[in-house]
Amino acid sequence: MKKTSQSLLLLYAFLLMSCQTSTKTLSNDIASLGNTIFSNVNLDAAQASQSTSAEISQAFKQALTIGTGKVVRQLGRQDGFALDQNIRIPLPQELQKVQNALEKVGMSALMDDLELRLNRAAEIATPEAKEIFVNAISQMSFSDVYEIYKGPQDSATQYF
Image (cartoon, rainbow, N blue to C red; front, side):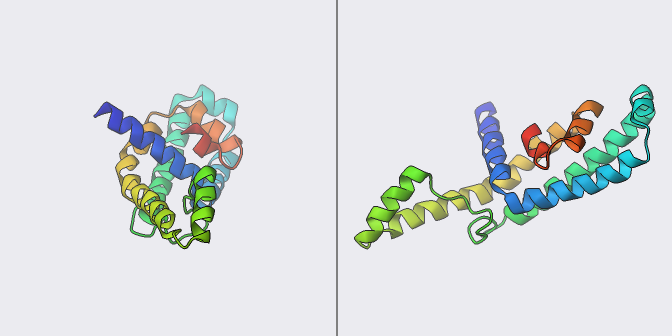
């Protein structure tokens, strides 16, 4: 069970990294929410005040949880990965060479099928990993939240 959870977490991390469209949307949503939250708060005072930092953290965590739900709904369905060229998981480069060689002899369908199965596995695994991410979000500290907000556009992905 523990090994399965770790495998799902690794797969989901890989999926998030490969989901440029979804993570850009999520990053934009996070940035917008962060600007709203943090622009009205004196950060030094917020860090000194447990209730204020807890409220900020809770709002930001809620946005991350909602964003995670959106990504899961988008990707965790049939063709969520397979038909979206922006997030489709390609074969590793070494296998693409094999696919090109097979294409020359009319047998690339074998590798096409492998790539489709890889994407289907990602679509199936995505909803399974949601709980892991929601749990990780719930355990974030105020510092974690602030670092994600102040970090690069993919800081949430890097955090996970």
